[in-house]
Length: 425
Image (cartoon, rainbow, N blue to C red; front, side, top):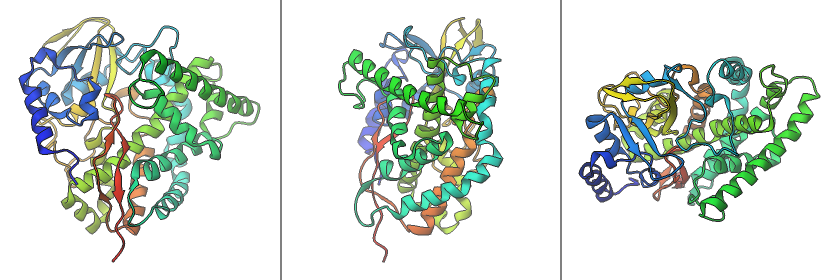
């Protein structure tokens, strides 16, 4: 089913093109919760591709939006001018709750910390994990009800990615859903429904309490593993790594949140996005089922189409001209991957979901340069496996209601996706 009515999309387009250009704030999470973001970025790409925006949120303030593919590449691959410190999201970190993490660091510290954990998602270890992921994917799918509506996000997408993340951490299996909760808490807005109150102060206090619970739990695991021989799990790697073994508590928490969100939120939302995209594009669904060899291409196209992290932030270390605009030292920059992945000048038929797309791996969703997603191959592997196993079992997955989307301009994802797997005839 099509989850967005024609009237809603027409109204969004009218609003995007009628408002003063200077008033467009792409970081408004409502644009993503309602799935009405596209015409705003379409207009910015055409009229103001390097756009100064003012956010009403005090911890964001003014920032540059970079919306075209090649401009985003220019920023993402120039870490000397465009720093990742102190954070990768637009809101500034609170002075009393800063979480250093290697994705929000510049060389040389970034390089040595990233190198510490990268072997776990390198080819040899992925080869070992493939059979485990396939077995779990099969068990999850075999447990799906037939002919009964259920929430695909919780039943399949979250379960598979959380199982994989628990394996990477060698995390206690019975507590693995804590990883899901901590991932949600780390990225949720005060009014997201994740917290007991929408009051920003109360929500922030709850967030901090739960993240301290997270680091306390992981400190127990750290203490167990630092006193044991090194093993091939993320906690042991961090505890024994020369560049990471002396991290303080907040830096440990920061890197944990990076690994949890990076290994959980993004892949689970792309798995869900693949079901929605194929439901909305039945010709592509038929094509895939007729030719399962297209699964790797479908995976890449879904990662582009979904763009599970809508943007990344940078900070200018000096004055720099981009797209005819002068970005001043200290200015914030949002690289809108979600917009670059729809750039008509670089990507053919960018608004189409097209699994036979030429150069299907040409997308921005993993980023570029020194911060290119360290787990990109693991993400692709999970998506490939789940669809190989789906096609063995289910001739159809029907989306039977509109998804409820995450209220965030950073994590572009889903809270629910109601589906039915029809009874086999």
